Image 1 (cartoon, rainbow, N blue to C red):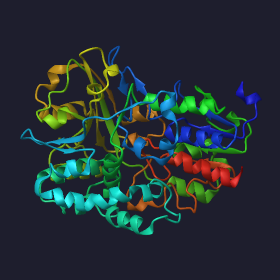
Image 2: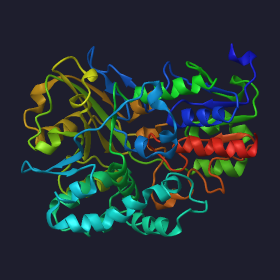
Image 3: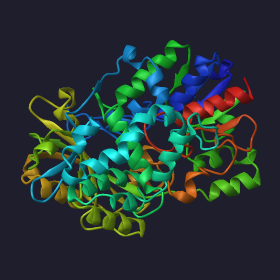
Image 4: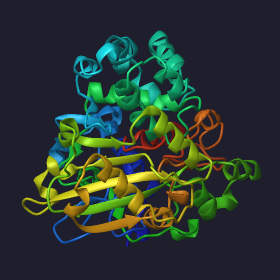
Length: 475
């Protein structure tokens, strides 16, 4: 049993940030024990046969622009441990009702060339940010309170990203440019007219032009498996089926890092935290939830638009105005009749996902936090809207409502896959405002989940920065 051994640090939770924290510490010579409550590691990076045998579905994360953008993940030799990324022909397509579509291309010029009179405005907006991304990526994907290496480049990004998605959309005149932007901004899971809603849109767009929106061969589980194999090659220890309910469940150690939500942090070690810190954590706000659908399909999705048939990701919702209205309704606690849908079709590019000639479909829409309404038909209607005949291709369906998402991953409070709302009020104090957001009020206890900067996504940067802080403080 591991409890008979001595570990310098224990990481609780094996999502991308827990794995990143464990790897960072182990690389520094710290002996680490990584504990996972579920039978398999990965958190949001799991792949399973959810519908029919032979159909492999990504349970949560599916497409990985942040995997390519992350300075931490790029630094790891994960390709030596089986990770292979596939780059779709079209990164993201945004179809319209007339059968046409806007598309995000890996090339800045390629994307601009499809946007008509907005092509020049697109290049003017994103060109400088793409060119300077390598100078500011570690700052954008990390804690706010640190000295920037390139202040001017960072300021240029900050001025744009603090604006709302709507303000940036107003720079464009065409339906195509505005719609394409709306689909990317809606990943923020806050209203498109809210300040800072454009920040995630900028990061995802820049990431696409710098590294793509790739799909891991075999499923998102392959990222977790490669990180696990690398961690073990360094001498790290992993135990699954080890749920931690209180600190007495784990051996004594110098540092404990929680890849959990603030709620779980308080449940497990609340008696070690100060009353002020507990009060602050209690005010951490969770955002929209998601309702997710996976399909086993008899054939590729029959999208009318050619770009959509070639895309790894398809954003379904139509115009900027329609998407903005739907996301505002969700923010107010309502369920739009025509929700914005994020759709992925991994099997078009990865034959290992489904039996020969057959395919998978992956989609979710945003819903009010904690909603248990069944959105299957609303999501299916949106796919059918842009791909007539889609229903006839469905062999089997699997769904997750927000409660089931939280049951799958306890960090997804109320179905919030981002670890908390990322609006202007919670951008700089996530989960609380402190010089280091990764330190708790208890000595040797850290939080390294998506509830810390830079937030949700498979990038590992939260775990990396939390582990770096622990190394400075203790080791």
